[in-house]
Image 1 (cartoon, one colour):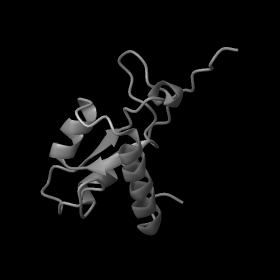
Image 2 (cartoon, one colour; image 1 turned 90 degrees about the horizontal axis):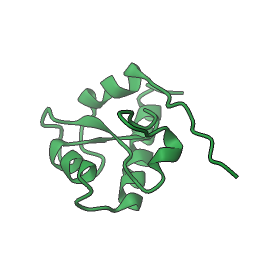
Image 3 (spheres, helix red, strand yellow; image 1 turned 180 degrees about the vertical axis):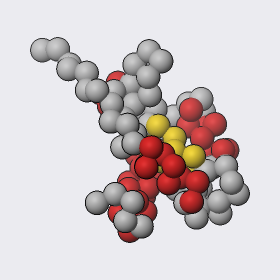
Image 4 (cartoon, one colour; image 1 turned 30 degrees about the vertical axis):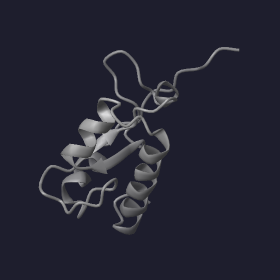
Length: 101
C-alpha cells in the first residue's frame, strides 16, 4: 500500500485573516502585530501536502504569535497535540468570524 500525496489547498483568505486575529491561539497573548498562520509541522505533515519546498495545506494552520511560531517551526516543543489544538481553535475563530463556512 502506498500513501497518495494530497495536493495542498491554498487560501490567501485564511492566511490573511491571521493579522486580524485578536490573540495567539497557542499561548493566548494579545495580538502584538506578529500573529501569522503557522503551517502544521507535526508527525503526519506529509500526509497534508508537506514536501520539499512545500508547506502543508493552508487548512492545517494555527494563528500564532512570533514566539510560538519559532517554537513550532523549529520543533523546540515537538508537541503535535498542542499544535493540532491550536489549529482547532483557529478553525473555531474562522467559523465564528464568518471567514470560512
